Amino acid sequence: MIATQTPSIDWLAIAPVIALVGAALAVILVRAMIRHAPRVYEASIVVGFVGLTVAALFLARQWSEVRDSGSYLAISDMVAVDGFAVFVGTVVLIATGLVLLLSSKYLARRGIESRPEYVALLLLSAAGMLVMSTANDLIVVFVALETLSIPLYVLSAYDRRRSRSLEAGMKYFVLGAFASAVLLYGIALVYGATGTTSLLGSEGNVGIAQFLSQVTLLEEGTLIAGLMLLLVGLGFKIAAVPFHMWTPDVYEGSPTPVTAFMASATKAAGFAALLRILLTAFVDYRSDWRPAIWGLAVLTLVVGSVAALVQRDIKRMLAYSSISHAGYVLIGLEAGTRQGLEAALFYLLVYAFMTVGSFAVVSVVGRRDDRHLIEDYRALGRDRPALAALLAFFLLAQAGVPPTGGFIAKLGVFAAAADARSYALLLVGVVASVIAAFFYLRVIVVMYASEDVEEATEAPAAARARVDAPTAVVLAVCAAFTLWVGILPTVTLEFARHAHLVN
Amino acid sequence: MKLTDTYFLTFAALLFTIGAVGLLVRRNVLVMFMCVELMLNAVNVTFVAFSKTLNDISGQAIVFFVLVVAAAEVAVGLAIIVAIFRRRRSGVTADDIDLLKG
Image (tube, rainbow over all chains, first blue to last red; front, side, top):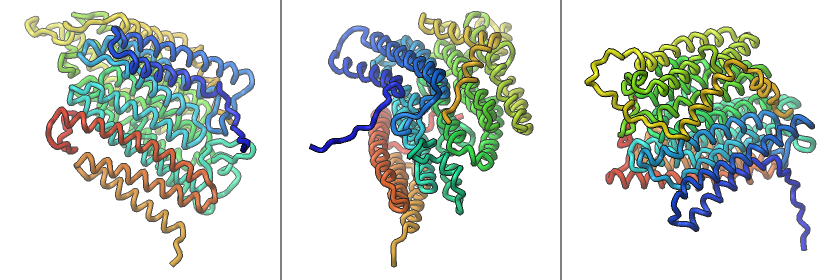
């Protein structure tokens, strides 16, 4: 018998992922065995929450481990256990939990089949995002990207009796597949230039970071081309201009909770990969990627803010707003410093709450044909004052008005940009946020200022808006967190401050 | 003529370009899928070529990951096409998918 040596596996490093995948598989298995149980969808949501809780506990364990004995690489340097991964994992888990709550009554209300597979797909996608946040190898990044994307293609086409949803799924699929092929080509070129796909190596295994700091490449073309293709591939996932074309269509067509998931969790995961790749593996090539990120950030801020001005559909408007928010996170990345990284992470966390809150309101207001025109929000302030006030609050938070979390988040990235002497970018960011204030305020004006419209015109959306208990919880949590971070940001800032990348 | 790895890399780059351009200009959704496959397989050729040059086996191992992912991706993509086709009962080209715009 041949003795095989099995690699040592640090189970804690992948325990959160196992918890989520386990919950997803449990849902699928039980569903396969029990065909016609009542309330099987509700039960699967409970299983989903158990999975999320277990994953969160393992993340907390990792956090204390990292704080006590420092961050480390595990599983043949494939994954990194560090504060950064725990932070992004926390954002992903919170967003997934909120979206699960949001989905619990949404599907039935919209006449969409409430199948447990929905929950399973959501959990599998979240598992992919957790892998993405810990990935220390370009191939792990690729596999994680696909693990998070493929369930999302299905989820955006989930309402398969509605052409718009199918169309969103199709568009997301085609452009997502294109983006991952480009990313993969970038990985291949980087592999060809450096001979490894590890971002950071350990003794006995030279990673890209070590290789680039020790070796001076005679011919940098392959490496730079690979790096740029990586940026393009990840640019699609984070919806940075000019790789944003799919965003408005997909955000508009997908079921609203899925849109909230894409805007919050997927963006965080995409940025996690981008931040880790650029700030660990290519930290010595900062002067090469900083101009590229600079250009991306400027385009994203300008196009996102300006295009949002002319939208008539609120989901499209929020899509462009999410594009412009990616621009602010890119400002933090462009700084390329520790401070910039902290600001970007903090922004992602706060943004997740603000955007899920906004989409939660959108998911209860809306016409039967599932269009979400801004004019449908006319007189919402009169008919549903609480709902209107919440939406106004989330929109003001996204605009960056104090004392909300959005203000502290924007302040953070601007301060990082000033520290890194990127004054031009800082200026673009400030101007973009002034433009952005217009389209957020436009919705608020529509909600409140049209009191004088004749009573005869019924307010179609407002009258039908019913806030179910889980959605109310989501709204309360999002609003409370956004306000809390705005007034007492210290705890969250400390969390981001200790979210170090492994080095 | 001796085949150096430059030939393989150039071939792969051409293949990738054909796939990318095809994906962007062709209207038939099935052809677009094939173009994605073309792009992914071009990357596979690149990986194997580099693996040979670098004398490092991991490049060839990566190809297996790519194959598995490509299969999963196409399965989901075809399912979405079938769902659209059932709903429309007509040919599915990219021009028919035009509800979402703005």
